[in-house]
Structures are given as structure tokens and as C-alpha cells.
Length: 137
Ligand code: GCU
Image 1: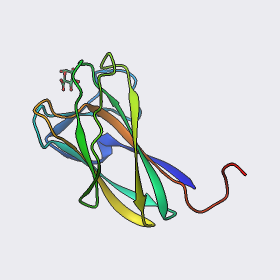
Image 2: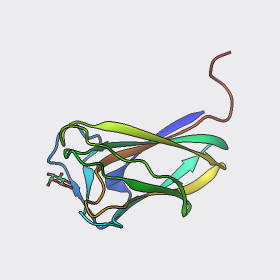
Image 3: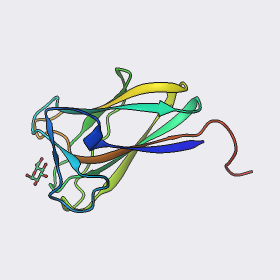
Image 4: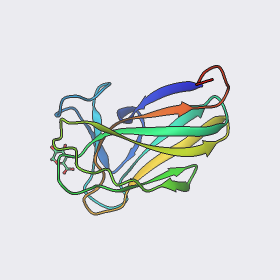
């Protein structure tokens, strides 16, 4: 199995900005989605071993209103998590969804579905569970 973290600030950003004004992010910043429906971050990710793959989004939402997003892999929706409020813009949490992927390169796009836009997104961690070599007996 393999785990790789991809920073949001290095991904393709549509209608968002890279900011660094709320502590606790990794890398050089995070993406502040524009406050509108349709803003997105898209990563190109590499999956080493085919099978169940977890996609863990590290985010902050300093409001009390969820900021739901559609998660799509290669253009197909795999989940619609809510990205609930985390209590502060400096409090980061992780929302994980699972998809069954082939080995190789895929796009993962997280698109805001309300007029509030997405939460602030720090990174995406991709963990494949295939390939053997670990786990409980
Ligand atoms: C504040 C906050 C931003 C955040 C924005 C929002 O302006 O400083 O980091 O992205 O609210 O509501 O989306």
C-alpha cells in the first residue's frame, strides 16, 4: 500500500486563491475557494495499486454552516461530503471518502455545491490499500 499527500496550493484551482493567513496548514498555504457554486480544486494523483483507495481532504471551515462539495474521480462523482464547520479557520479536520481505482493517474476534483463555496482546503492524501505487504493477519 502507498500513501501520498498532494497540497491544494499545487493543484489546479478554478475560482479560488492560495492564502496563508490561517495557521495550521501544511506546505505553503491552502486554497480559499471563491464563495460561489462551482469553484473547485483538481488534483492529478497517482495510484500505485488498484483497488479501494481513500481520499482524505484536510480542510477548515470557520463558519457554522457546512460547505458541501462533490468529489469526482475522472469526472464521475464518488461522494458528496458535507465539510461541516470545524470551529475556527485555524482548526483543521479531515474528511475521507473511498473510491475503487485502477492503478495509474487519475484526476480528483472537489467542487463546491453551494453559494458559500468550499471550505479552505489544505491537502489531499491518497492511500491505496492494494499491493499487499501489510495489514492485520
Ligand atoms: C474568511 C476567511 C477565509 C475564508 C472565508 C470564507 O474570509 O478569512 O479564509 O475562505 O472567510 O468564508 O470562505
